[in-house]
Amino acid sequence: MSLVPDTDGLSEDHLLLIETVADFAKKELLPLDRAWDQSEGTVYDVLPQLGEMGLMTLCVPEAYGGLECPYRVYAAIAHELAKWSPSTSVTVAVHSMVGRIIHKYGNAAIHDMCLSGWSDVRHFGAFALSEAGAGSDAAAVKTMAVESDDGYRISGEKMWITNGMHARWFLTLARLQGAPDGESLCAFLIDGDDPGLQRSQIHGKLGIRGSETAVIHLDQVFVPKDRLLGDRGEGLKVCLSSLNEGRIGIAAQACGIAEACLEEMTSYASHREQFGKPIGKFQAIGDMLADSAVELEASKNLIWRAATTVDLGQSDRSECSMAKLYASESANRIAYRAVQVHGGSGFVHECRVEQLFRDARVTPIYEGTSEVQRMVIAACLAKKAG
Ligand SMILES: Cc1cc2nc3c(=O)[nH]c(=O)nc-3n(C[C@H](O)[C@H](O)[C@H](O)COP(=O)(O)OP(=O)(O)OC[C@H]3O[C@@H](n4cnc5c(N)ncnc54)[C@H](O)[C@@H]3O)c2cc1C
Image (tube, rainbow, N blue to C red; front, side, top):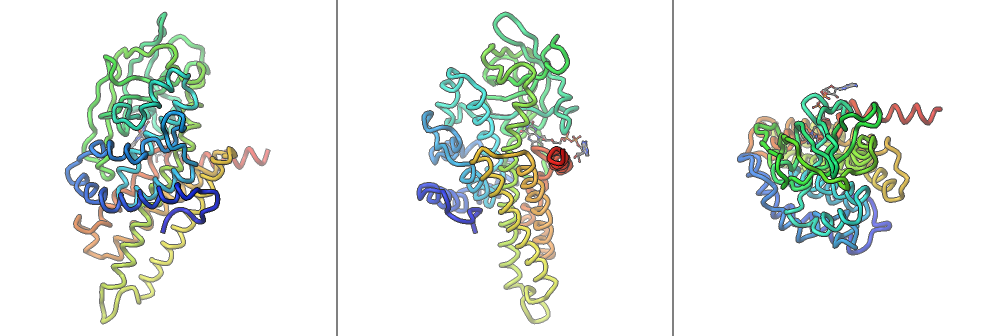
């Protein structure tokens, strides 16, 4: 059960890649993911392997050694990874999003410096937008950039940064000191190897515990002029336009979790017996399976449609938001049912749905909460209505 509804437009190589990733994730990543959940270990350890398979450069142009996949293929791979390791899926999604931003907004020198080595762990990427006081309201960031002759000095603190413990490149949003309102928000590419950047891990997460989440402290970190991405004042546009496509990756992650839940509960319902028959024969259980199957299928279609519009260059923001909103909310409903179908067995770690239930919970929160997705969809509707 892949995300791909048909093979239309996808090459044999793409289909083979999706199949290979599914196989690899099931055999290699699932046991690791289960262990990371207990130890708060990190996906970072398997990045070299992911890099060799091309998974760190899915969206990077072939000219820089990447696979230059259509967005639909990227979404299908995010889904396969998430089915067996949600933590790996989000790690790859964030790294891929930063690569796309660098490709879109960086100059040739930055492309050569970063993208040529994008499959290498030494070029691991993170997206550092959120702060303690700026989450849904991204424009409220307080991180400051002070201009100097040859570049900028950036100071502030970024919260909740996925990949933050090991990333080399941080795409960040800061306020340019002295710039007029409306022109002050700028996107910068920070080199984590430069002096002034400190990282501390956020422990005790509910789910996706194999994925790194960090606080990034910036103390006058120097950024040369050509690592201002986009024009001055375009920082929010740079970040939000990329987040829009990035949301498909999170939708695909949610969908992978939901699919794993449905498979687990279907299997359990067919062999767990009560009152002398498999519980799947009871209508109440059958209803839960049926509702989950329908919601999963609807998620897949929304994701595929959104990814197709990106491939065609026709994406309006609402398609990505619809996919993210529906896939993440339905994944949580499906994960809830998966635990319910398992009864008491679903309440302990030994049973995988216990972890999937927790892993699903973050999907309606990061890369824009469900409430924010509804705001985006409503704004698009209002715009179309004139
Ligand atoms: C595990 C994890 C990883 C993350 N990774 C990253 C990352 O890599 N990079 C990064 O920059 N950020 C990251 N984030 C941050 C994430 O994007 C934010 O948590 C999210 O955008 C919500 O912001 P907030 O937590 O400040 O909540 P708030 O914005 O304070 O929202 C709290 C509640 O109020 C609601 N709300 C807020 N405004 C409105 C409104 N106008 N109308 C209706 N309801 C509203 C929200 O929907 C939410 O329910 C991550 C978060 C987590 C938990």
